[in-house]
Length: 108
Length: 112
Image (cartoon, rainbow over all chains, first blue to last red; front, side, top):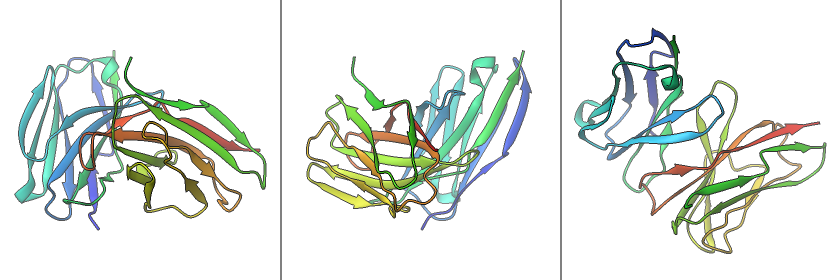
């Protein structure tokens, strides 16, 4: 099955800084999602992005399926951005496989 | 409000006991999922259902059982055969398979 890796595993930022989170997958996929898990455990869907680029406020994501990676950009980070960011990838007709996550801490 | 609810928020299980976690959605989604998350880890798929009265095993189904008698409900039973059940359990739903998934708030299961 698909293997999903994320980097870096941990990231500490000062409030206002920008960051890039990376998701690599082992084979071509046709579906990819990014999630944010807050400190209370709730997962929020950020992007459904099988290919191309999407933006939502301070967040944007780019997936290049042919090169087997996706990037999540966070600009002007805020303390509320803290938590764990997961990507999940899937082949057509198969279930999503989640990566191990990137733990982000934004300091005031 | 539309969404996914899970109950209870915390659940304690005694040795040899079966416990059932509730998951309800009013989003009119066909597909529902159960995931397990261990501390510091990602999510692993336990069971999924793409339509009422049908469900499939995920990657770690041993020691768990589910039912899907109604579109809006997908309860998970953790049986006594699951030897290490302490974890955070998350339920999700999507309009159909491989669409955007929406998650409930989760249930934390602890073994006494």
